Length: 410
Image (cartoon, rainbow, N blue to C red; front, side, top):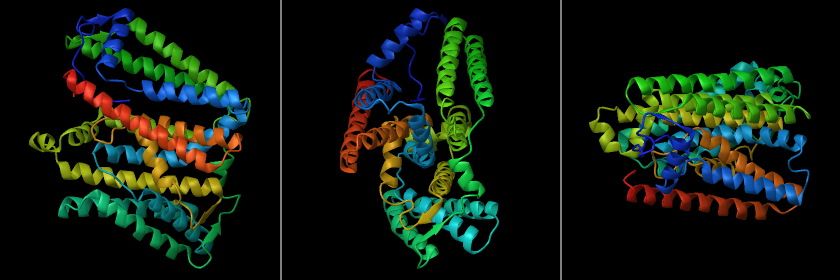
């Protein structure tokens, strides 16, 4: 999932690449330690195969629809974690921020009679303010983010309990828009197929433009044949997924929102100066500073974005549960979001990863949880398996870093 540039291989340095050149370049990158999304894709295929063999219900359309909805809330939080990890920092308070945003939504909407949009904006604003506070403490006083966010975990949890008051649990009306959005709103089938076509056309168009720019600059580029084949395969895969999900309830709007956030963040990271600055700071902060990047601004922007996404994830979770309570954002929310980012391919060492890490990582974790639930196994087994997968992901990341260093790609 990395977007870090690597030196051209011999196959890549010969102008317009054929499919054979592309395969040779892929093998060269793999041998050089640039594994990309390959480990997590292979792992996800193994997980899905094992659970489907043990329980034929696992890959049924109704279960996959539920799986997608379960991914949306924590996946949104994990998207913010990806940004923080790209800087080589950490945020341990994302779960508490999610819980506080849910509490503000519930209290504001049901007890203070705020309009729903106002309650939602209040939750998001508090999340953004907390991110700004973290960034101020980090850039002004140099306090490690581990300490700042650990204190934030406890402090924000206290605020959440204070906001909820003595009741400790507040239900949201089932006919409210936020609950309907999280539980009952799905794309119509025709619109799903239209979006699949738009995705395929956008992919082919953007890759063609990129190839032309590289050709104009005298660099190697992907051939039109390869781009079209990839585009057709993408449309076929997405089209089949949309058709299969629509044999049940279809694609939930909450999951679609999560995917749109991932796509937007992927564009920001790959195509904008701000995104390139994040990779530069995460790769080598001193080199980034000497290159003229305003490092403190990058830290402030990233922390505000990450905590706002955590608040948004908390609001989606509250809508999904139709309630906010003392356990909102608690339990394993923090660890699940961080684990999703790492399992998806974001490096704990900073500078490597992509927005898609949040999507594939949370799908892996929720697949494990869903499969074990169908097998009626205890949650302790889920924690052990998820921990093992996380450890494996970190080991692969460490080994790939070592391999890239040996091949001069670090």
